[in-house]
Image (tube, rainbow, N blue to C red; front, top):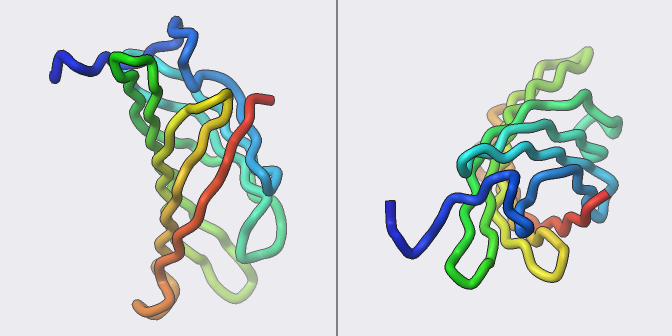
Length: 128
């Protein structure tokens, strides 16, 4: 492991541990153990237009020598509708600054044509 970085754990005051809400009302809850993120994601945004049940997430986090926290995590989706079952994955990467977790995300959907299968966006999370 690079000595310039330390893994963030739940005892760090700069940890992402806890429950966060983004600008669209979706929520994420993180547990942090030796730099590993686990938890759940509740989305208010979906192709069905409805909230989806909580989905497990996995990821990592680290703190730089100046105390900056970086985090990344992924969620696998399986959404069943009367017409089809949709499969996708979303990954977020972000930085904790000024009490906000500012992220970029990429969503890839298996049910779309290649030219339409990938979406990219931004989320800003605040502690709930």
